Length: 244
Image 1: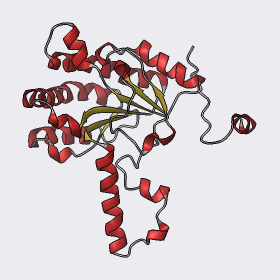
Image 2 (image 1 turned 120 degrees about the vertical axis):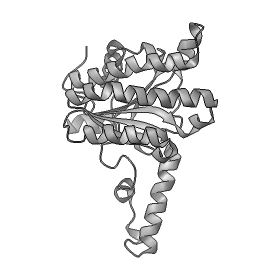
Image 3 (image 1 turned 90 degrees about the vertical axis):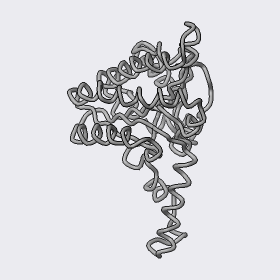
Image 4 (image 1 turned 180 degrees about the vertical axis):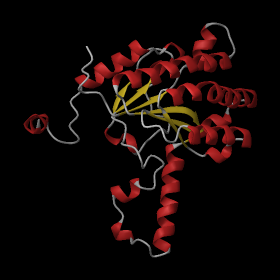
């Protein structure tokens, strides 16, 4: 049973399996993406019900731009439709929407809808829902290095002063804690260029369920498994027990 006193503050999810879910039904991959929206809704509701403060969803990677053009257009159209449809409900439930990634890669219409949704929910104080869109961790790290290099060139900071804390200030996730738990649905067991720096001490959970079928029950099982883990951060189990 889930312990409500040990709920992770930040959960990140790689929403995998939409295409395979549709293929099993003999349908177009886009149909799977459309049905994945229901799972997003369930995940957001679950976070609100359990007290999870940050939910980050890997919605579109930079590598996804290599997919067939018809699928890319369908995905971006679905993104706009979903934002228009879901944001009023997110706002009603005090959810704040954010994005991370190279948003400039999207069309003006997509960027406009995203910015409107972000602004509309910006004052909300509940769950922070972050969509990783046109995101890759390597891109994020390189961008952080560029920003720091400019600071060094302008003599605003010295190379010797750069440490983990300073580096994290230049990541797109600088205003949120690192995820304690990362879930990837569909049984695949890799990060696929997602939150590589932030995942240094995350727990991983790889359920076989395909994303459109991911329910509150599946989410609860992930949290229950997380709560069984002993998070040592390089220390011994005995040290952790002494600190409790």
